[in-house]
Length: 362
Image (cartoon, rainbow, N blue to C red; front, side, top):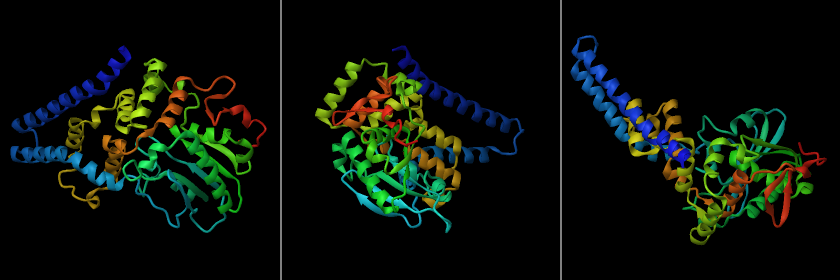
């Protein structure tokens, strides 16, 4: 209870007071400076700038929800081609850049993430896949198919279906590439799901991949301080009962509920409130006259796309199916044991990192 109260105060009340004090201090100092004749601005110029900053603060939320939506996840690549899809995922081939020989292949196992896996296509100028194709690697990107509005079938996605898709799509990518072994990559919360897909059928997967690469992925979620701390505040029985009732009612953990949990853990929810958005726009002073994407410079493009990415609206489009939520809950509360066994099973089969030994998979 004390930890939760600390995070609520630290993430909400304190940022509000800090912004309010900063606003009062900054504007009063400017006004006093003008009245004393120490500033180059006069009162008309001061109030003109003040009104522009006020309008910037008021418009920031509109700019994020409209232009941010257009920008976020908008990266496209020369020669990219969709080569497979099912009810939940698509598989896209993204060829390397340049005319030199191919230096390798990355299979990106994307999917269900809070705020969506469109993060990997963040912006045309800043995105996850660009560095790989620049380095001469072909990319096969398994990505979530749409959102809960455009694809209601997402509710039915399970860990087993995710693992089956990784098996099927790596088969297709392996054939498409000319049967060259690949690096299988899982990022953040997708990392342990990707590992589970390998451990579910090591004999088959070792024919297609030579490396399992997990990036910023907690192997044992209990050691992920902030998120693990929040999840372990509640009795496991309460969490599992909540999952059962959610499965009966909604089939998914709503994205905005998950977003609030993450925001409390990270003490970052104030910035997503209307007043938090206003203060951000006020401080920037850059959004008073922004009407279209072309009005944004590179820095503001990043600002707007990033703010939309972590917004409650975007979070609400990407709920987490109960089966995948249960998987993450087990990783963060039970964890991987000393023998390397995962706290989940695939079609009744135990999943263990020990099975990678002597498999040839790095």
